[in-house]
Structures are given as structure tokens and as C-alpha cells.
Image (cartoon, rainbow over all chains, first blue to last red; front, top):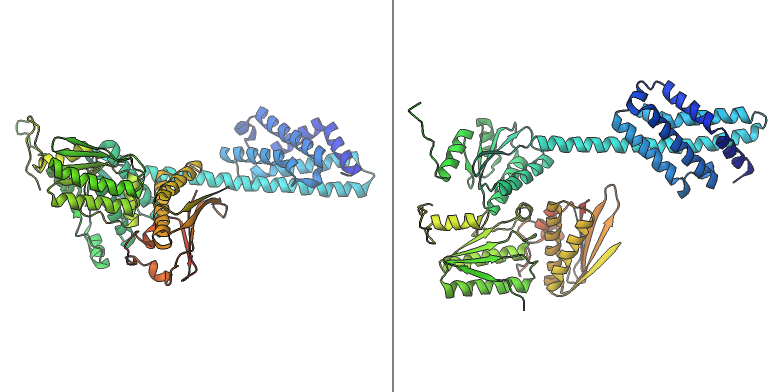
Length: 288
Length: 131
Length: 129
């Protein structure tokens, strides 16, 4: 590390309080509406302080010029962690990443105040520090994207879970109302949920109602057939209900063979079949 | 030599498969079951595979063969307790398990065998005529 | 890390399946993916036994766009002349062992096969972690 590089780190250490104060002010000023409400003043201070300390520590060991060395890993981790936390709180990418840029502005301002005479070294150090903090900003950006992806993935999973209810209509009889488009990943979840429920509820009859499925193409039909085959292997009988006329037409046109499978036009019809299978009779009570 | 135990309960043979079965064990089981069906004149065989975390084509074919062989000796073979993931995998793989009867568990299989009149009903339970 | 299991006798198939379970547990694969991977590995290792007699199975995790659990099945057997045909549903050679390649292919996220007559066979399967 050059003499100048060490001198710069010394300056930053000495003016720690100024830097933190200016950085916090800048973070607050640069259009961060409600930042304190969302993170809290103490937490914002703690995060800024930790990041600054980690940075000075890493720079003290290998200098600002060596941001890709393992000594800087702790700083990178901290940036990723702070970014992830802010992303989850609902910050935009601008709000999330500019705190790194804000620090850059403050550090350069401090250097300007301390080293106004030696212009050559000043410029060289400014360039080095700019590089280092741009690297941190890149880490923050990718952490932002990664966190958003995690959120989206989790929401997708939640939607999948929500969209596949399995209803126990009677002792040993399940109904699975399928609603909406059946893509491949949703079909998989549906199959797994149904089979799991067959085991846990000890049901050996399952009704798949497809009244709410707008389109049955070969792929969807194939998937339904596979689900039924798997259920049968486990010892449960499946029946499809809710086949609308236009779906019956497509199935016939596509040449999908449903001859091996019980189908009923309505859920009521399927339920009646299920009751018959279980030797149950619904009796109209005349006394009431 | 390790072997999979076969329990005789009344007119039934009950086999619980827990091990990861190597091929020889599978072949032995096939032989033992057919021998037992002959000597005990069992009317039903129940293979509980709930402890099995994989059925490949070899084991699948064995299940089919046992079912076919016991059928000609007038005994129905039920495979019970297949795990959902195993069932999905068998379907994806395209294994034909045609002649095998399946049920969720041992109890349900006994219920079905009784309903078919293959084994005696309990005294307080009416045997149903079905299928 | 890499695991190597030689395949020469029937008992080795059990070892291959156990290894799949171990690796699947390490990478917290879902139950369904674990069962599919175990079944696929059992089929392919059996193919080695039936067609080549001996071979080797390699287990590893690879980093790509997405992390994958990968198994490679290698043998110096007779090889496959027409891979296209071997991948058709319902195709099997005389012995009738094994369900064949198309079923196995459907179980995994990635399937690759390299083979030529007299050159042995190399099948790579992978599942996203």
C-alpha cells in the first residue's frame, strides 16, 4: 500500500464522526421519505456505523485498491445484508443502492477538505475510492435483485398453495375443484397435494372437478390422466366431473382416450356415484 | 440369508416390505409367497410397501408377477400403502402394473377382500356382494 | 466433492440407491425429486449390469445457471448403435430388462447420452437442487 493510501485511511479514521454524521444526513436528505420510520434512527445509525467500521478495517489491511481480496468479504456481506433487509422493507432499487453512493460523495468531500494542495495524489485516491464504492454498489444491486427474486418465488409458491384446495366432502371422499389455467408447475403441485391428502385423510375416492378450467389441451388431459393413474396405484379411485360441452368436444377432437376413466357431467353426478360406491343413500326426511 | 417375513393371518398372507431390496431378495420373496399360498391355501396376499421409498422396473415387475401367479392359484394380491412420490414416479416411468389390486392400507384391502367374499366376514359385519 | 460407486454385482444397485439418498438429503431435495432420482439411478445402473456387466457411477453437484445434483453412468460395454431409436417409447432389446431410456429420461430435469458401438455408454442425469 502506498504512503498516500495509508494517509487517506488515517484521515477517514480520525474524522469518523464527521463522516457518519454527513452520511446519515445525506441518506436522509436524498429523497428517502419515511426512511427513519421504516428502519428507525438507531438502526440506521447502527448499520451505517457497522459498514463504515468494516470498510476502514478492510482498507486498513489491504487498501481501497484491493476490494476483490478476501479481506473485503466482510464488507461485501454487510452490504448484501443491509440491502436485503431494506429490499424486504419495500425500498425501491434507487433508495436501496444510493446509500452506497452517498458514502462515496461524503468520503470525497472529506478528502477535499483535508488535501486541497496535493492535487495529483488527491485525484489518484479519489479514483481508487470511487472504484471501491462502485464495486460495493454493484454488490448492493445484485443483492437487491436476488432478494426481489426470493420474494417473487415465495409469492408464487403461496399462490400455488392457495389455488389448490382439497375438500373433504364426506368420510373418505375428497373433492378437488380445479380453477384457472393448468400449467405444468401448477399441475405438479395439484397432483402432489391431492395424493398427500388421500393418504392423510384415508380417502379412497377423489373427485376432480374441472368446471373452472377454461381449456383442456392434450397436455392438461395427459396430466389429469397421470394424476388418476397415480391415485389408483395408491388404492384410490378418481372420477372427473364438470366436463362442459366445449371441453368434451376438444377432448374428442384431440383424440384423448378417456374410456378407461369415470367421468360425469356435473359434480352432483360424481358425488352420487361416490355415495353409491360407498353404499351410502341420501334419504329425504318427510317429517320436516 | 436374509429373507422378508410372511405372516399368515387366517386366510391371509401379510408381507411388510421395509428394506431396500436387492434383486435376490425380490426373487426369493416371489418364490416364498407362491409356496406359502400353496401350503396355506390363502385367499388373499397383502403386500404393504409403505416403507418402500422406491419402486423401479424390477420391483414393479415382481409385484405384477406375484399378482399374476397368485391369481392363478385363486388368491388375490393387494399392494397397499404406496407413497405418493413413488406412485407419481411409477406413472412417469411408464411402468405397467395392470393386474395388481391396490388399496390405501391393510385395513382397506381386507375390507375389499371381505366384500368380494374371498375371506370370511367378521360376525358383526355383513359381507357385501360387490363388483 | 465427488463420490464413485463401481457397479459389478446386483448388490451394487442397492449401494447406488443409498448414495442417491445420501446426496439428496445433503442438498435437501424434495421427497418426489429424491424418489425420481433414486428410481432413475436404479434403472441406469441396472442397464450397466445387464448390457455391459461392469461400470462406474459418479455423483457430484455442479454449478451452472442453477445448481444441479448430477449422476454419471459409465461403462465400456457394447454401446448403442441408434440412440434416437433407444429413446423411443416402447423400445427394448431382446432381454426385456429395464424399462428403457425414455421412461428414465422423463424422471429427471436433464438427460444426456453419449454412446457408439464398441465405445461404451455414458449417461448423464441431473436434477435441479
